Image (cartoon, rainbow, N blue to C red):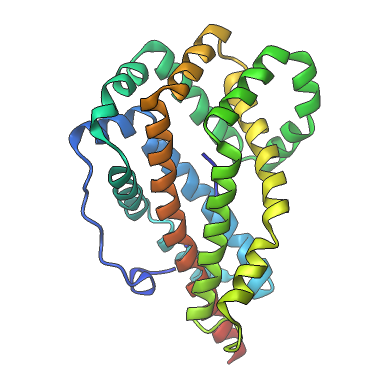
Length: 273
């Protein structure tokens, strides 16, 4: 899963979503650390808001901008959107092997390692340093590197994350356009061309981030436990779980990104007045 918007609920034009997940799905998402992961994604999003302000507002956005970004990265809304997308894409008949794995000692350890790595990567300097060390980590830990490569390939993590990022970028531009932040003569095909033009850079950055993050998470894991995780990922239940997670995150990031675009357009308009 990769990282990646203000609206205030009015900007999103969506009523609060009802919690559609069953108690067993709720429990599974709790077991994989979803609550903490959403908190970390919110923290990442607040930093991203500063970057957006620099790019679109010409500098710090101020307290009003910070409040708008914080409102978009509302973890309650993010959670319900993710659960809705997940539940719509997942067959509960697949739950038992997932419950067994994530309730096991191996599953608990893996979730803890993934969360710890995500927490560590809130430090951008550490993230950048880890990326620079990927060749060294490959040379010194060839078995672990091969297992991480297998994990990425089995779960189609590069393509899935690239598609998610492209969808999010498109949603951001749509939000900008809906809010009047783009010229009125800009067409949908113009936006699509611009978004697709980012594909190569996004793919490269995604691949680099995945290796850095997953190596940080899984290097402490014993090889046989990582093999058990790979076996789960290859299974029908594991594949269904991964697809449903991506469906849920895609819905969540599209909603967030569109809201960010609409908010940015509001602040751009206010600066022009």
